[in-house]
Image (cartoon, rainbow, N blue to C red):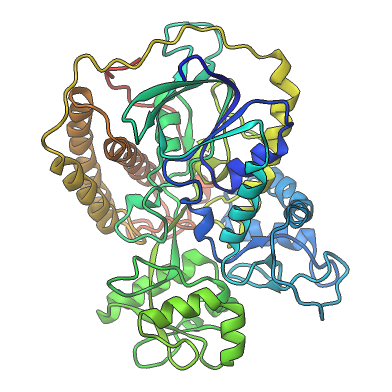
Length: 544
């Protein structure tokens, strides 16, 4: 293993990483790492779909661009938005050609991609979300993964979690440009740390919503790629913009199961416990307002009335319509005792998407040579201060292809001749206090929810900053003295990302998009700029 050199190392096995792998030529030696099973990532849990202009008769590229810019509250990169949205129809056709079973409606007569049933979600002025019933992410993930498994040049590694990136600067090769050389990787089954050398390394590790107590994301969404890139010296931007999905099923055993936004797109109404609607009082678009507005409104009503949840009601549509369009949501709600066709379902907001991340250029290249970031862990400029629904899967596919094209153009010029030291465990022991990890993990997620959640204040952020600095010191000490486990790695990364979110939120003294603070409730035109943190705080590490 230590002698293996790959052309391309992809850390993450979701839509972004798989799209990249399939867009690279078959003469390249590629490794894909997944810290759980290959399908246990955020992609497989995405319900809504992928937004792209598929009906030129009733929609347009310019309309999609305008909607994305409006949702981003002044912080999107107009050039990036144009590039990605323009590529949307081709990305959708690529997925269709790959065999993704999108829901069809043969009665549709359009001037675009015929036969697709399109739904509408918050922030979109037209129907442009292609979906596979209400399990779009699962359909995309499993289809792409099957194609990847057919490629003999691609090696798949389950239960492998990256410890840290290896760079020339960390190895004291102080050349002009810092170059990525691969990563140290923990095999969770053997407990050994191996070196994965690579000419190109791609972070496709997803977001960091597990930093909050309530989230729609799987347990692995601990911000690993963002934290590793930050420690290696990459810039990180806009981490204050954490998106909370407005409607997650409220039930003690549901683990914040997502009620897809398409339910509201197909007429679902948000209700108070007495059955009255409330969204029209806050936004003319009512239930179809962008996610930040809907989530903040629900949070406000819950606090104002002292209630545990609000309700979403689509029972005015027929049972046949509901079960055909939302078979998985219907079945899950029924399992927990709710019949969507007859009654409202209780919902609450939950952390859902990381709009900020590792700063990249137009092809996913980071500040470190040969290191790329794509998908949710990256900051491209597409989402700005608030991501519009179903633009995330679009970004994964498009940037996977952009990144592949850049690697193809460079691969023949790259070499990797550096001597890389083995991982040193000579001065560590097994911990007999694993409870420390569990306690710190729980404490971070609770104070992030309470102090750095949907609504913030200066005092809450100060409290959170004090707590995270103290916990980071404890975690660093633990990391330096005990043998590494996957739980410790995730905790270390989660804590680092929490601090980045807090620091970013403290710097934005206004309310914009997903960042809302009671001390600065209005937008400040002088702050209509990307919030980039340039000064990573270095700590001693037991490993270069």
